[in-house]
Image 1: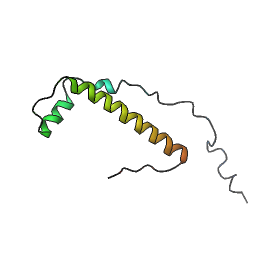
Image 2: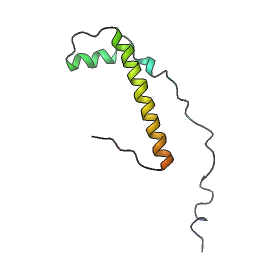
Image 3: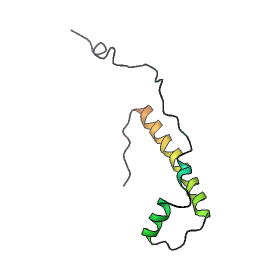
Image 4: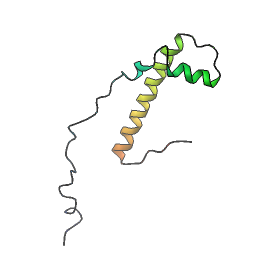
Length: 86
């Protein structure tokens, strides 16, 4: 009869991950002067969007993505499930 540790032998436990996704800030540069943000703002009832709002949006998005990355790292190391707060 096999023990509890022998059942999972060869399943990839403890093997280093060699292929990781490279995190870049290029996604934040997708927020440009035209496009989706102004369209969504118009639907939300905004009449005027100054040019400085795009730079501020990029900064907020970088902070949010950094916070999201830290949360995913924490939950993956603690082997917990992350849930949305509603």
